[in-house]
Image (cartoon, rainbow, N blue to C red; front, side):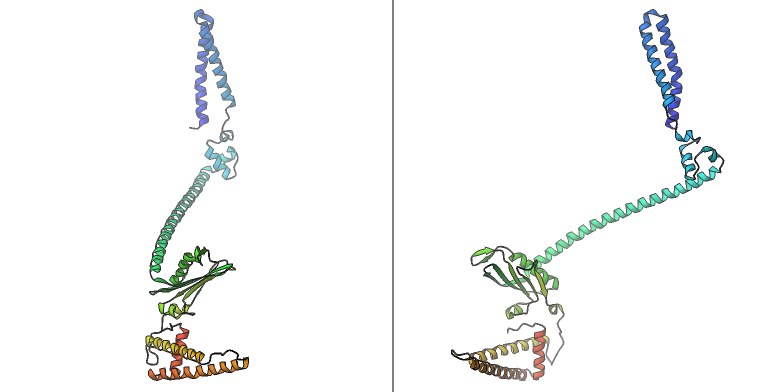
Length: 352
């Protein structure tokens, strides 16, 4: 039952009751002397209540759907949905079918709303699960990275560290090598570890500074480190003019080595011969330089002739050494040159 009908019923029931009380109060006031005061109070109170009830009847707004002649509010809403504004036109139509169509349409709308709500709940649940999974993966990745970092520190050895005070610039050069097999990610992570270790509070001639120039070299093996030069696998550099450190890698070290037999020699045999040939080259160069040292007082022409003789001597001696090596290992000079080229191209360690 609607609120309007409820109020209307209450008012209708109260009005006769108030009138009876009013008459009773008036009777006491007029005819019973001892209870005149009580009768007056009852009479005035009941009269006030009567006036209030009358006001309620006059000022209580009748629902719009009743004003327009419809039996229920839903009926008026359905009629409006079909463009019908008054009950007379509504009554002249086949409104039962219209109500059924409206209810069917309303059911479809409610069904679509329910499906949308369920879809949103499902999407929200999937989003929540995805966030939880992402958090779990992040924690797992951090643990893996931490374990990998700890393991990497164990197989990384710092071979040398050089801090050079250049006045305005404080330069640090760090060289390290791996004691075990590694991949490119580890070669990159090793640079980060060493950079973070030496980027602050480094001693330069007894005084500690934050370096302004970095050069960090990671070598694949101790042999490569001892050979020096450009045999590093990854390196990082940062100068005063650079906003952040830059990394470089030699991808040749991440390519599987050719284990095939060449010239009747295994990979290890070829690496050994490469080291012998490099050592022979160094010996030939040292002998050539010691035999043709520049004497005080030489003019430019004499120096140039001496340099030419030094070069010729080096070439002759080194050729002899290479012939001896080829003969010892039953190789042609062409085969030996191929091994030397292979070693230089693949950055084989040089020191014996």
